[in-house]
Length: 462
RNA sequence: GGCCCCGUCGUCUAGCGGUUAGGAUCCAUGGUUUUCAUCCAUGUCACAGGAGUUCAAUUCUCCUCGGGGUCACCA
Image (tube, rainbow, N blue to C red; front, side, top):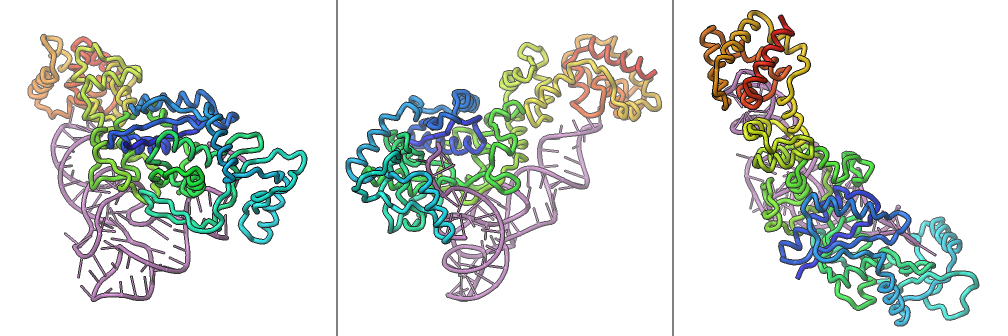
């Protein structure tokens, strides 16, 4: 069974980049009928917060990503880590190092001055003398000092590192006993049964260290899949400073979960020329081997297009539900269908859609100057007057076509072009140029409101 | 700086020795639409550079250049 995981440290909101790796992990687990588990890496008490964990969960909920089983919190696992540290100590695979921080700093400075790479010199690796006074030791793992470490990676291929280039006896437990990141990740991943690690490729160079831990404990390695970073427009790793990297900000801006997920799945992954993926298709088609090797630049142009696509292809009932959070309640409006059909073609976001609807529903309180100037020349007042008069005599008006017929007859009787009535009427109804078909607008707002708006525009421009 | 990864249109990408280098987005133009949007059509735009290997390289190898990541008692 495939078990994948998402392991954020709760230091803030859920980030776009984190969401993408979470999505990849989720898809791969689901595709294989496996499990997608969540682990909160909250060992750094100073920087972590419960709010951040909640924010991550909230985002998952919005997007419909469900983790399997209980959430694992690293902060509850001290005993487990301590047990494995003790085991390594007992087996002579780790040891106490009494080098003080000052001494370590000095060592590094000397190495830097000599243009050597900075590494621990192994002073206490085989130490059996009397430890110095007043130093709380750290625990270091005995890492191989020579030889090759190969990370078998599903997206990068086999990546090999030379032990002498990158390794030293790194710290697995601090002076206060707290275990370090590369140690606990290996412990947790193994104990949680994770056999497919999907994470950002900024972790690739950490992986050899984690492999050392697996080896020391005699555990099998999981499959690693290091997915390329998402870069900002400057080509640097996308960070929280880049703005709009909070997943929930996309909800506020009016993007749908389907669009955001579709957008993200195509960033760094593809399946031929296909652009549109439902969740079911993503699950069916996703495979880490199709993940790109190179970083991609974060650019939301395509997200707008996808969002518009999903809006256009959503049912009116779905849209009505979604629009409630943008303060537009249409669920019981009798012309809901006509309205929604008209505006879903012209909105890129749900937020825009709500604004469009409100513009139609509200009586114009002012008129766009340019539009008035353009529309009200010649006998525009007479035309729109004639329209108003005709409208007042009509009954049983429901559909856009009913209103369209009235416009047609006015146009025919006065022997004018459609534009002659369209432009002033548009100003009357919407206060500006642009927008949905006038027959649609009138059908939505009804006869009385239409009469009112026509009267208003005449008063304002006579 | 050491180590590691990467390099196809502005952007997301297809390509897996022989293609007029494809799609999408963006942009531009035209059509449809009384307007706007949608939709449709058309167009502009790319293999970082140099050596090899090969009958043949965007595809394989090496070098250069460029970009990124990482080097903690952070995660």
